Image 1 (cartoon, rainbow, N blue to C red):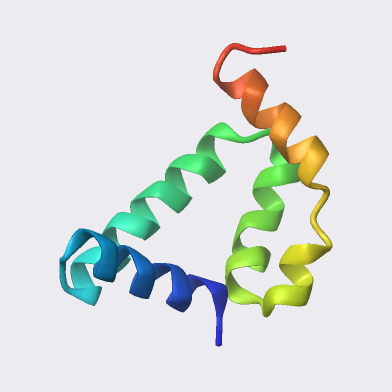
Image 2 (image 1 turned 180 degrees about the vertical axis):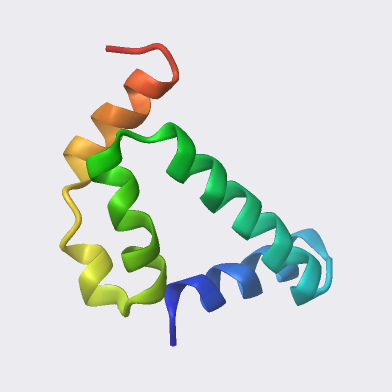
Length: 75
């Protein structure tokens, strides 16, 4: 199962909307992140969401968290 599909199902279930609407919401957030993240991290977004869990586990979460903090004004 792809991570993107699982994320869509979780959003649909937790918010109480159709999977079609949840997919639009998730894709909107993903596109926003790809535009705002530094290029080296943005390049991994599609890979992580389209791959199985082991690929996601290999992401450098510390680096990602630091970059996200910078995105929101923290250093």
